[in-house]
Structures are given as structure tokens and as C-alpha cells.
Image (tube, rainbow, N blue to C red; front, side, top):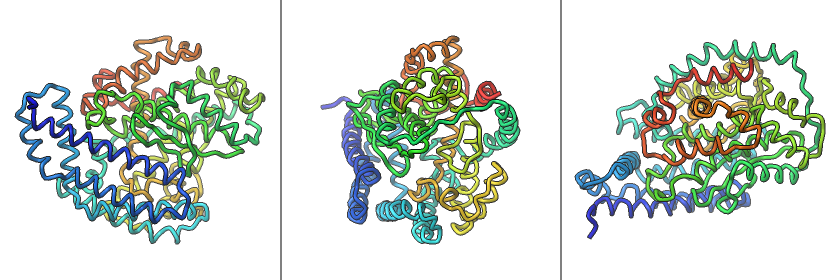
Length: 495
């Protein structure tokens, strides 16, 4: 007889859920990377059935009793943290009916599948009917979560991605960024106008880019025995720690798009592959928040891969896989990787203008979920904000404007703030690394990347969800999240 019978029942139950979620992750990856187009209706129905099964297990009536009884059992600190995460998951699940979970799965799969072709065709009017259905269900979900938590609709959705973070926090953080970012962009562009850069000359065959990506992933420590790289419409990372799937997309005229996307997703993947194996199947073994997860992808893509030190490592790999040319010389490559040029596409944005893309989306999706605006209002708002923030004209260009991201077709509202929170966390992590390793940049230049990976392993990967986010940040860096680290990083690198 277990000495902690209720807790033992919970851990057994969540191990079963972990296995169901493993299957769901593989099904979702296949839909985006491998599934033939005519399989979408059948796949959507199968996913809806599987998600309903997972939801029934997350809302099993026995869980409430087990949680209550486990509270009184003699649990250690790790078990207490796991119980805290179980309780959070159980409460969120019980706020939603199974019928809504099924309906959302079907609507989102239908919208995302059609979006792939509609985006290419610049077909906003064709996109709208499916998107309205996704939005309506997202608002229903947000209202139910709000009723349960006492939060606003948007805060209730964001709490799933960033536990404890509220729109008021995002308003404060983004309000500060808006105050200094336009001036920084202007100063950097003035400086770079006198620093010519040689552009790479293509075409770059996709098979060569794929080989390059795999070589760089190996250099960054990705375990190909526990994951793989594929191709999809929109880059993503998924799967489970034992089997991580990442995707990228290729253009023969621009190898940096796929390479930087691959490096970004490799950061996510390294986190997943290094989560504590002894916690597998337990909620404590999951990443703490999406912002913390994004801090790993941005540690790899922005902090590490766009540094001058890393350019020296990357240069010979580019020559080996794509053929030598002047653009790949280390000093020029470093300038190429840090070129600031306002552009239309978020995932291709440079490090300095990227926050503007996130703020724009946040300022649209928050009133959208709260019911203050409707789907039909999005293009005009997008056009106005894109011009105000980056001076770009997107009128009539839905493909490279409000239809460019997969997040809204998939109902992932309130996710976007995680990207800029992640960039801020990443800057804070590297500031802490440099305190303990003042020669960090020289170590990177010498190819000793373990200085970065060992720090992340100790402070982030091995901790998973043991600590709530503010406590994790304090234990990791010695202070609460301080956006000033992000500003200092940008000014030091670009000015």
C-alpha cells in the first residue's frame, strides 16, 4: 500500500495523460508536416475525438478528491510543486465543457488548413468565415475561464501561457518599450547606413540548406536520436522530450530565413530534450511558461546565433554547405545577422524591430477577445499600427499582413506577449552568464558553447516547473524580471 495513496493515484493518472498528449503531439505534427491535403477532415475528426478523451481524463471526477486528500499527505517539496501544477491543470480543464473542446479542435483544424492556401492567395474574405468561428469559440473559452478565475477574458487566456502575468503587466512593460524603441531603431539605422554589408548571392538549393540546418543543429547539441527536422508552412517545435519534432521552411533566395528559424526551434527543442527525465509524465516536468520556453529559443537565435562570436563559427559551415563567397566572411556575416531593416514578416524580423511586431499583435488581439472589436476590423487596425510603428504600408497585403501568422487561425490568442517576455528573459539570462563567465564571448568564439548550455541546463532546463515563474527568475538571475537588461543588450550590440 503506498504511503501517499492519493498522490500515487494522481501521478499514475497524469502519466496516462502524458502518453495521450504524446499521441496528440505526433498527430498534430503529422497534420502540419506530412499529411496529404485530403486527409484533413478525417484527421480533424480524429483529433477532436482524442482531445475529448484527454479532456475527460483531465476532468475525471476522482481527481478533485485525490487532490484534496493529497494535500494532507506527507509530501516533499518536489511532490508539493507537482501537486500545485496538477491543481492548476485540473481547475483550468474543469472550467470548459467537453463539447467546447471538440468544437474548438474542429474549427481550428479547418481554419488552419484552409489558411495555408488562403494566405498564399491573399484571400482575406475567404479566410473570414472560418476565422469568425475560431474567434467565437475562443471568446466562449475565455469567458468560461474568466468566470472561473475572476479575471478578464484576455487575462484568463494569457494565464494558460504565462501563469500569474496580467495585461496590466504587459501594458506596463510594452509601454516602456514603445517609449524608447522607435528612437533606438532610428539611431541604429543611421549608424548602419555607414556600414555597408555584402548580400549573399543565391540561389541556395533546398537540399543544401537542409544539410546546413542539420549540421548547425548538431553543433548546438540537438539529439537526432530523440528528434527530427522537417518542413512546414510555419516553423514550429512540438512532440515530447523523448521525441521532439521541429520544422522550418525554405526559400531558395534566402537561406537565413530557414537557418534562423531552425536555430530558434532548436532552442525550444534543447529545452524539451533536457527536461528532467525523472519528472516525465508529471506536470512539474513541463516547461514553466511559454515566455520561459521562448527565452530558450531566443537565447539560441538572438543572443547566441546573431553574436559576432558565433558568426566566426558559422562562416566555415556556410562556405562548406552553400559554397564560399564574400558575404560569408565572418565580419560581414556578423553585420548581415544584425542588420536592422523594418520588414513586414514577424518571423523574419531583426532583433531590434521584432518587439514592434509583437506589440502590434497584442494591441489587436486583446480588444478582439474582449469583444471591443470584430474580425472585420483587423486589417485597418493592422495597417495603421504597422505604419505607426515601422513606417510600412500593408494596405491590401493580407498575405504579409494580418494573415501571416498561424497563431490566430489555431485559436492561440494571448500567446504573442510570450515572445517579447522571452526576449527579455533571454537578455537577463545572458547578463547573468556574463557575471559568472566574463569571457563568455571569447568562449563562444572558441567554439566552447558548453558555457552557454551548462548554464541553461543548471538554471532553466533542470528546473522545469519546480518553481513558479517569479521565483524561477529570481533564483536564476538574482532579481525579478528587469526589462532594462533587454534594452542594454540591444544598445550594446547595435550602438
